Image (cartoon, rainbow, N blue to C red):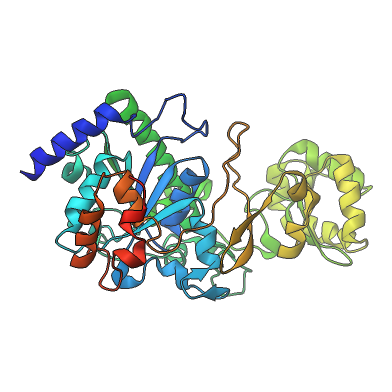
Length: 442
């Protein structure tokens, strides 16, 4: 009976609404992902980062928050946190909507299926064994929407001996060998300064979703996307992983953030600070020797090519380090940039945000928030077309529950109130707290 009801409901929606994957109507906003609707069971970092990319490109991201847990745990991450708002949460959740829904509640399934019938994507970042238990996989949803794309981002994927284990960025940096590559030679294994596994996995999930949406639009059939933090971290070992898998290469940690095989390609101390100098092409090495007024180094057999410079790394670095220590960072950078040698300062965060390139490109955006005031965030690096997406603050927990159920699922005010009374939106959140269903236009 449930199957028949949703087949009829889905048919009705398709007759009166644009394709939930891509809205091609003249009234549609021209942002790249306008018309894409995403139902996101997500929290914390990696998952919300994935859907943030979609939201910034114009997708409608409807975030399902668990009322029993107080919603996304990112709401409570310090510092700069007050009540259910935090700058951490704002960073990952701008341009999204939030509904409160307890997926373990007996009536939650019917609500979820109605949402899926009108969506293009169901996304989750849970343990790998959870999507099936919660009914979030393609085979469990295709009866209400055969085009639905179901994407799971988990620690270890939806199969294998670690499927039921949770996973976090720091763990993956250790497990995938990243920490063994990072830090000074005589120091303990070190993580990256940022949660790069989380962020990279979010990007990978977004790419997978876009690819699956394109296939669904072309072929009319959705699918599962199975993305893991661990496999993303392994893939990002890149050529070092290839060296290790093919030749048994064992990397050694090098001082001053040196490249494993290209010399010079690292940090150098000047008389008043640090700079980065990179010579990944022979022409850059020649230009550097000109800046140093050491043309003899170009023809020196010890440094004549990549292999020679790598083999005689310590001899070369002794020469370069002595030279760079004799002048200021500003003096060196002026000379290096003028000569076309890839180089940069090693900035503090404050200095990085004050770089003139940031201002010229609008790299910091401002969003007003009723509790946090003016929130200044880094702009999306996704510059697609000329139209910018108007930015909206991250949603309050459950802020859009009534509006989404009325406008997207066609629920009456009375039905929403009955569901609220049943506790499907959380024991403490009735229809009145979510916003009066009778005051929201159908």
